[in-house]
Length: 231
Length: 350
Image (cartoon, rainbow over all chains, first blue to last red; front, top):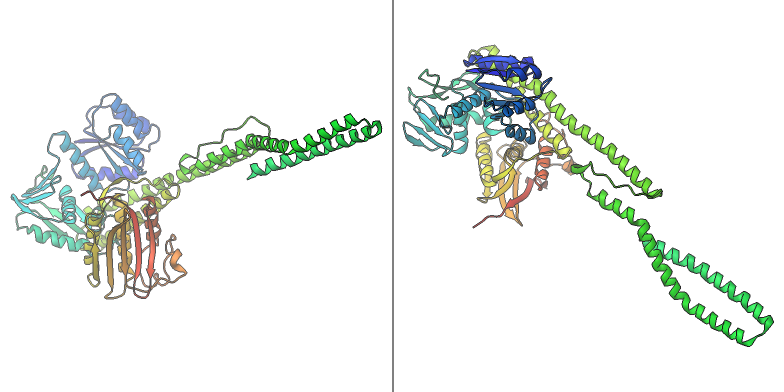
């Protein structure tokens, strides 16, 4: 999958590029709005990541001319200004998703995967990993078709892991993504919930498991080394 | 009031002039007639005098009405100024008072007020732009820090000293992110630009989740609760969640060992009332107002190693006010410290 990354801050684009390449994407970078304006029309890109504030032409006007010319390539907008208006404007102009800085690479990858699933016509509401299935609409969790009852928090926690299998998630990341900003990062709440989730899922040796990466955080381990799994 | 005064003054002054002039005229004619001594003319004169005295109050009333009318015309621009100035808020600072085509003091007053509004609008817009720029300037380095650290953590090896270092750094970045986010919300609230993503929120559920979390975070505390079910409010979920988590965190942090926390949620007069009480040292009288100030922390909390930047309560209050509600410290005794939050709720349909 070939991605065009348009971001004027070289430091930001370099870590995004690194993260995406590690995940197997081919990435082209562009730092200038005017140059980007020409590059977005080049065929061959499967997805464009577009920063809104750019030198030269800004992201929103690039997006506008792209859509005016009937190009349907998916676009994810990046912005440091998280006002509701900008988000609405971006989505109205035809962006497929919108991500506020600072964001986690894992989240960006998860959104890219979601968009490609949507385009390839796969059902969006089901997340799979080995025998584990998560339905985002009915909020049902099944292992080998056996239903498991999870509380809302536990479900959100599991969803976070299922969206980025194989990635190490730190406690602070988990706390921020599932609970928000209100709690102190030093609490043990994440560990307690992980323990509960493990007990409820009661995963056997072969199935997927949330493993502890000592001193770092947690990771959803998948057994089949299959790229399409959980995509 | 001003109008009444003007009309009375007009009536008195013009009435006075009229009396003086009429009296003088009478006197002169009277003196001349005394010499001539013509009786018929003298009678005529006496009739004239009588009618003059009789018509005087009527003339005065007419004059008063005239004064009333004229002052109304004169003061009309001031009324317009008041009406428009009353309507100008932060949301429509671009409104101006229409100028009147007279060279009077009124048009000067309007000009001065409009100039003041110009200056206000400029500095206000600068404040808004600063908020947006500050957001960008602060978020960019944070994005880089977080991204680079995240990549490094993915490749980190378990149980290495460097790995621990990376984790510590990422925890601090997270703390910084939280502070920046809170400051931005405060800055947005200051300029009336706090945009709420309103949706129907099940307040009861939100509180119950938080109580569950509190059980885990602070297993040493006793928790009492009386939560009315299905209390629904129109709110920004993330922000309301932040408020409730914040109040709960405070109730844990400033509690005594083996203390108590009491959660209550009810509906009263179409308001959702949420209160949270905790045992602990009472907040001194002088700090009652300070606790809602930014970066204020109760004395001793620095030394007791209680984490926090002192933004929580001021932020919580701003958020609640943006929801057309209020957050107050309702009780601070030796027994309990209680915070009371109220926001408009959606009526329960049965």
